[in-house]
Length: 344
Image 1 (cartoon, rainbow, N blue to C red):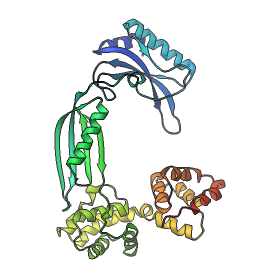
Image 2: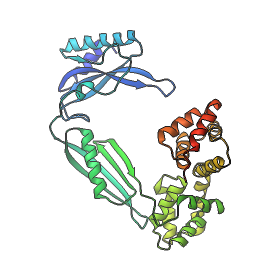
Image 3: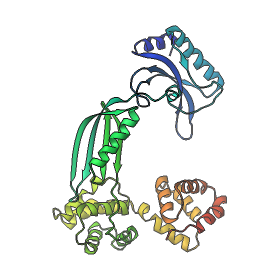
Image 4: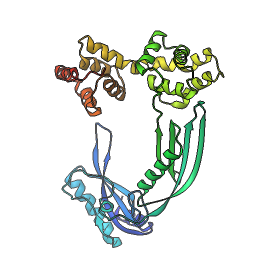
C-alpha cells in the first residue's frame, strides 16, 4: 500500500491523534512470521482504555531488519504528511507483545458507559432449555472490563448450570462461553459409569437405566450431565433425548438411535484413561503407547486430558509428555516421571 493511499485512509478517520506500529504474528504453528501492523490511534472508548482505541490500516513484513526499516520509512512518511506522531517498538526488536503499547502506557481512564447486548441460555432440572436476552450500558474503564463485569453479573443472576453467555458489541460477538454443571454428587463415579457402558456395549438405555436404578430421583438434567462428563460428548443440547427419555417422552429404541452411536464413536477418547492405567499397572511404556496414538491421529487435547485423568500431573507436564513422546529415546525418562504420580 502506497504512502498516498495510507494518508488518504487515515484522513477518513475521525478523532485521530497518532499512528502506531504494533507487533502481530501470522501463519500457522509450523510457519509463524512477525509482522508490523500500522494502526491509527483515535480518541474514543476502546477495548483496552475508556479514552483511546486503535484502528488497523495495513500490515508490513517485519521478520528482518531491512523489512522493519522499510515499514518505518513508509509509516514515518505517512505520519509526517498528516502531522501526527508515530509510535512503535524499537526497530532492533524481533517480535514482542502485541496490541497497543502506547495505550498500555496511559494512565487509567474515566468510567464510561459501554453498550453491550447479551444472550443467556440455561438448562432446568427438567432438562429443558430456557433463554433470555437484553441490552446494558456497563460503566467501566475499558471495554474488556465492561465485558468481565457484565459476565460476572449475568453468571450470578442466572444460577442454573450449564449456562451459556454470549455478549455482543453492536453486531460483533465479543464473548462466548459456557459455565459447565458440576458432576452430580449423588451419582456413582465417572469410572463406574464408563464401566457400565463397556459392559452394555455402549447402549445408552442400559447406562441410563443403571443410573436411575442407583438414584431413583435423578433429574433429567443430571442424567444429561452424567453422560456429558463420562463420555466427552460436549454439545449439551444434543443430549436432549436423554431428558426426553427420562420424562417418558421417547422410548428405549429412540434413545438408542440418538445417543448410543455417539458414545460408541467417542469410546477411544473416554476409555483412554482406563487403558493408560491398565498399561501402567502391567509395566508397559505409556510414552510408547501415546506415540502410537499420535501416529494413528489421536486428538492432542484428548491425549492431554486422558494423561491427566490417569496420572496426577499438571497440564503443562502432560503437554510436555505428549510432545516429548514422539522420540522413542525419551521413553525411559518419561515413564519414570509417571511412576510416582499414579492417580488412585
